[in-house]
Length: 334
Image (tube, rainbow, N blue to C red; front, top):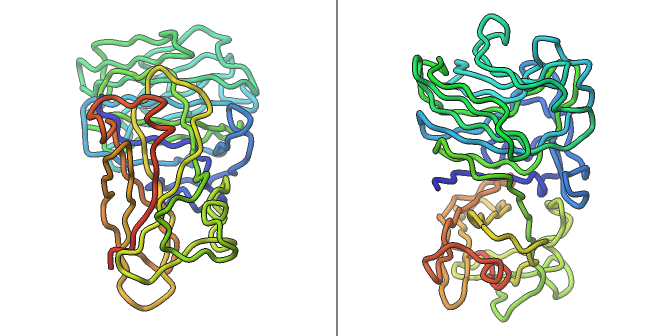
């Protein structure tokens, strides 16, 4: 299961912050607290050509999943308003859209003369959350493009032209006349979907005995870092001493999932001096502590992440108990 990336959009405070995690290209309509489950956040895109893109190493097989709510289905084009794109560079390979009758449609170029497949009508209704998954095998003659809606296969196209070049970029796409809102996104380089997924954002919940960094106020560092979304310089911890570490207990999962595909550590950090500064995460599971990639800091905030598909302590798939017992922190490297 080559999971590459996932995002619940919960930590972003402004429309510019998704760029810190590799998202690029869109004029984002807004980030709000109107997430799929009420307590989470979501991202909205409006307007043709407003693509929020995420890059990957070029692959002939890709799967994506995301929650979708569109504001006004009937205002979309009868032939289809764009929803998702598969790209090589800036060149479209194939795409998925929604028609004004509530059907899903796939194609290359426009959805009419370059149609690949169309679902039954009435599947998408205005203002309702749905979970969409797309499985793609890219080939100019024997390609496969499947679309799943809430676990049901609704488009199944085989031996079709799904593009001449491998996919190195995917895009959440805006439509001209209906605001698309997205949540709980995942990306893999395999043509097998994961099934409906939820992305939980788990901020720090309590300090531990490892606490070298200095709180901006008070003595409770975890309380300064637990906001959803992050609040940048309103409160924070800081250190200029190489080797200083902080480690925190984390908030528990909001449910007890039967399958956990991976844990992704996320750190937002910046420097406020002229020295070269490097930082990395420290992630502890059981008796095992692993270090994230060492990253250079800049004067502006950068959000970095490290992905752990397996529990470092057991070498096996994550369990809810393992996630809930893990600890996350960070370290001054230089």
